[in-house]
Length: 55
Image (tube, rainbow, N blue to C red):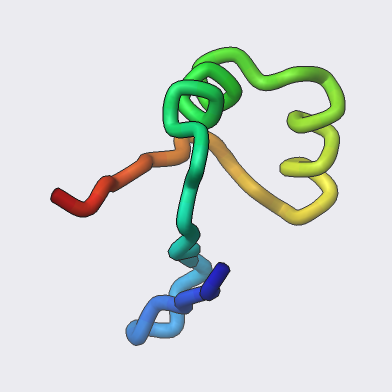
């Protein structure tokens, strides 16, 4: 996993990761568990989140 920060100094960030279970990740993003939502909140993640895939 690699973290990326915005060059303009804003608080936008991105991560790059090799995902083995894309369907599982999409399901988690569509309907996060309480635990996942709590982890996102503890890290300062604000919705909406956008996922991009390499083609």
